[in-house]
Length: 377
Ligand SMILES: *Cc1c(COP(=O)(O)O)cnc(C)c1O
Image 1 (cartoon, helix red, strand yellow):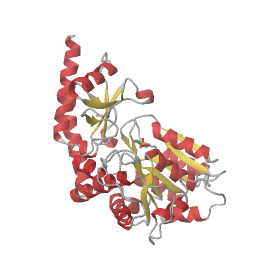
Image 2 (cartoon, protein in one colour):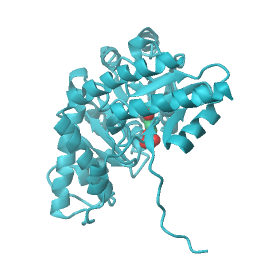
Image 3 (spheres, helix red, strand yellow):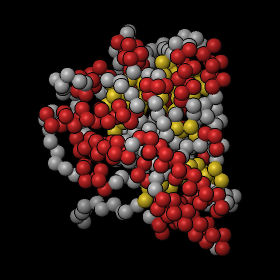
Image 4 (cartoon, helix red, strand yellow):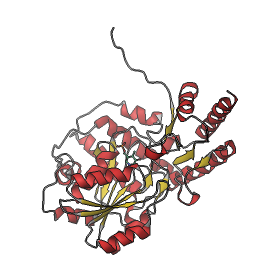
């Protein structure tokens, strides 16, 4: 049997990412591939850096897109800032904080873990106590928007606290960037990473990162070599850096970068503040549509993420059954729970291009019909 071309079904993506990719971005990715050292491509890379600075609200020179998914961005931040023997305080209130711990340990660092209940933000008081016990901690790492639970932690306050104790900060902004304010310079974030497929509405596989002056200084003062060749910032910057001499490091995913460029242009056209506002307003509309169906939020209103709505699955309702009906009958994807949330939560993403009225209408109608069917049947 001859295998023929793959034609994916048309879906509406309202899960924890990827989100819907606008046709305009897909069209950009279908443009002709040119050489990655072509002067025209170099200009485009510079524009991506400029657009990312706008998105991160930073003047950091070292701002670019790592060739790899969000996890590559996390790893780039950790491998460059953590050396064997370094102490790193890591907040864990969901899946992604756990991964940061693993990254720290693989670099030979000691992770001082601050655990918080899933569904709650990182606790400032506990972090402060950890700094009192470990005043020599070099870095504080935390997840701004925990996609596994739908919780926003107070990034500004956490960064401020870390700086009071002379520590650097690594911030996971994979889900937050573009959906809620992420003010890198105003908050003083030292190292931050994100992902292309959540609120930026690009395809997966690129990780925007930015490093501030204190992080750059710490990297310059390293005693040991970065253990990852591919993610060593100093080497990568010879490729992405300004000065345009562009030494070959690896071959950038050229067409993916066309896509990221286009999605960033779209955010620039909308205006970043308008994007935050749209995510917030659509979250409130979703709340108004879902609560009458007996669906309640898992997270307290004070720290809910507008772009990732974690809903408690009603008693007696079969998670898998509902989600497969949504996929089959409505071609609609929502997320299930992760870890302790498996079978207990639905994660409804209204990220980037997916955050639209028609999608709120679709998911609320579909859930209403499927849930009432199940109750009757
Ligand atoms: C999705 C996500 C990641 C990982 O991104 P990938 O692109 O899947 O590697 C990391 N952190 C958070 C908070 C995420 O939501």
